[in-house]
Amino acid sequence: MKDMFFRCIEWLVNVLGRMGVPESHRTLTATVVLWSAVALVVILSFMLVRRLRRPASREITDKTEPVVEEPVVEEPVVEEPVVEEPVVEEPVVEEPVVEEPVVEEPVVEEPVVEEPVVEEPVVEEPVVEEPVVEEPVVEEPVVEEPVVEEPVVEEPVVEEPVVEEPVSLFQRMRTGLAKTQASLVGRIDALLRGCQGVDEELLEELEEILITADLGMKTTQQLIQSLEMRLDKGQLNDPDVLREALKGEIRDRLMQESAPLDPQRATPFVIMVVGVNGVGKTTTIGKLAHQYVQQGKKVLVGAGDTFRAAAAEQLEVWGQRAGVEVIRQAAGSDPAAVAFDAIKAAQARKADVLLLDTAGRLHTKVNLMEELKKIRRVLDREMPGAPHETLLVVDATTGQNALVQARLFQEAVSVSGLALTKLDGTARGGMLVAIGGELGLPIHYVGIGEGIEDLRPFDPDLFVEALFRQDG
Ligand SMILES: Nc1nc2c(ncn2[C@@H]2O[C@H](COP(=O)(O)OP(=O)(O)OP(=O)(O)O)[C@@H](O)[C@H]2O)c(=O)[nH]1
Picture (cartoon, protein in one colour):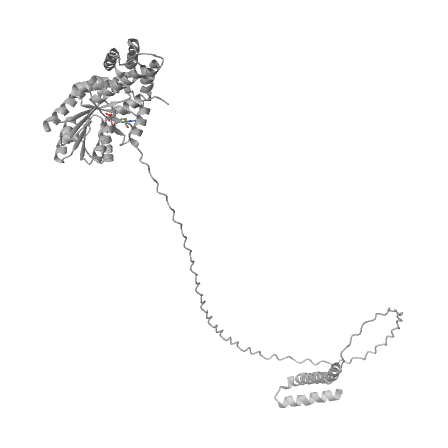
């Protein structure tokens, strides 16, 4: 065996020599080749043996009959005693290994030629994004069912005619005259209540009540004299008759003097408005302007109160409310000059009515009265007969002082009529009768509030009824 091995080596060395392998490498190469061949033979043999053995085993497997699993009858397991046989260990005869001398030949390392790695370019296929085809959302139309509103059958509101006048005016008068009613009529009723008849003594007590209720001395005496005459004639035998007679006398006094303003008398119809500070002149002019505009008249307003700075502005406000033009000059200018401008403008613009405001500073009454006289002269010069009305505005809550004021203005500018303001307040109705009785002046208007509509023609009947009302 050994010889055969060395002979093979020799043979291989020769073959390698013929192949041109250098001598120094031949033996080693031959040894390696031979051992490799031996190893290859051994491996092939082993594989051949395994291949030959496999079919037999497969056949056995194929021929295996199906296992019929019989019911397992579990018999009692009789455990037999395990007789452990003694293991006879055979002596291992180790053959002596003959180590052959290893001839180490220098290893010639062949240069490793590394082949260049050719990296194939990665061709990135373009990602073709398929377009997302969004299916259109077909919104189904919301079919709103029509709300069938049942027709609201509004029953016709049958507005009953509200008879505002004279009811509301009467109510306001009643409220405004409550104080007078208590101090005058209330006391008269208390006096007459227990009386069986009417005599001089009763009339004297009545006289006292009238004087203290703002009717003034002169008016009171006139009234008592008239009642005494009736008593003498035997017409006053009952307290109720006396009450009705007094009521009639007061109404007559108010009625006698009352006369409506008549703007038809002249064009322009000039109304000069006078009165002391704060009685309601400007407000009354605004309300009057509104009334005339409502009647379809062309109205102009002259701001003759140049003394109080804010007076003209206040009048402008009322002018705007009523929709009329206001003729004015700077504060402090001559009121007569304003009167001149105003009447000229009224004539030029063919106004139907000219309302002229004036100052009301009573503390400089001499100057005031002179000023008012001058205004009158200017107006009369520009339009003979003007002013056609000189309206004295009196605050109904003033009492006896109103009578004093009225006398003053009457003397200076010959007042032709009255406008009684604030009758919706705590008016002193007795004073009204006094002014009418003593000065013989008609009461044209009453103011029953601060609104533009709150000016009413004076109605003596209504006034007396409100004053002499009996509660309950
Ligand atoms: N309750 C009530 N108030 C009134 C009435 N008339 C006027 N007034 C108020 O009285 C106040 C004075 O009114 P004005 O019109 O400014 O008085 P005036 O006389 O012009 O005053 P001067 O410009 O200072 O001279 C205001 O507050 C008005 O609103 C009325 O009839 N009833």
